[in-house]
Image 1 (cartoon, rainbow, N blue to C red):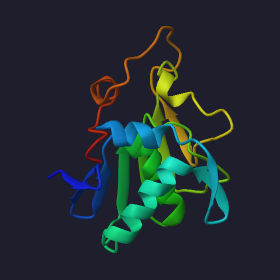
Image 2 (cartoon, rainbow, N blue to C red; image 1 turned 180 degrees about the vertical axis):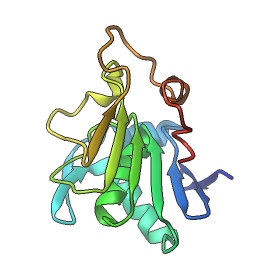
Image 3 (tube, one colour; image 1 turned 120 degrees about the vertical axis):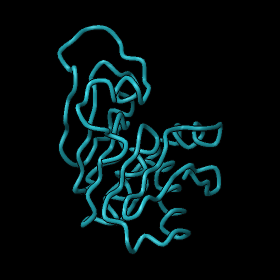
Length: 157
């Protein structure tokens, strides 16, 4: 069941934390705060750090064994993955989030998606899994477009 934490939409299903993509003006404001700030021995996107710190401070994550997220939520998941390095992360269509971040992450991306391209000074920690990466044209940035190219439910891993 979806929950809200200071305009951050997420759900916890057993040992799985999922952070949704941008839902409102607050999320879009945090998306554009692409200023590198120190975060646990690396540099990370300020907007995602603010959300990650709010989640760390406010939620009991002791039983979490998997963190996932789409777009904005994927960026937050990657920052959380740097903080909780022993928890696997699956980010879908995440923008680049930091410099020197380390994470046990898999990033599912499509190179036709413009949302994954901004912030050239940042990178994504972990491994990249490209879908439809060799086709031309643009991809509409939506969960259903990513899901349609995978044989498993990427939002309920």
